[in-house]
Length: 112
Length: 111
Image (cartoon, rainbow over all chains, first blue to last red; front, side, top):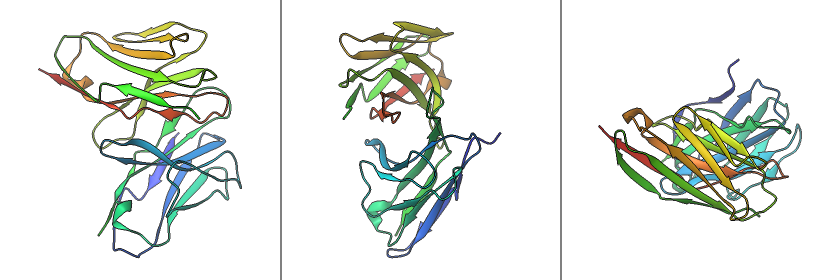
């Protein structure tokens, strides 16, 4: 049981490049989330999904897109990376009912 | 929407002392309050949680208390050890099942 797996763990992008971060969970959780974590700002919600084929905007969605084509996967895309998107990105998931909010180990992204 | 305030942002204690981190929430519909510990370079890990029908929960050296009337909950760590040094996050979750997090407390335990 791997829980929540994020790939890649580290990435350096040049301004304007695009990339996709992958989150995979094997707990059959309905809800999945993408957060960014910056010093002093805590965890800020970018986008989330309450089920396969659904997505919704969180607190800081601009510059990001997401897709949830399969229940176990939640993809975060950056179409044209900017230095302001330098951050640590965390994926999380939880079941519709009950506790069990689980985080991945994070992706450290640097945009130069 | 829900708003969660967490204090202090930094807490420095001597090994063996107790540490208390406090959070307040705004939405009276919130009914689940987890606490997470994040060690350097890792994702947050759930360490203890409490539901709104319980006033206190304890697990070895950590405990959480909840005051629904005042809308605040606290994390208590007794007999702190250097390995307790980490960033701690509180969260509140209601009917939407989407938690709102506090901004985190950096706990430093000096040997």
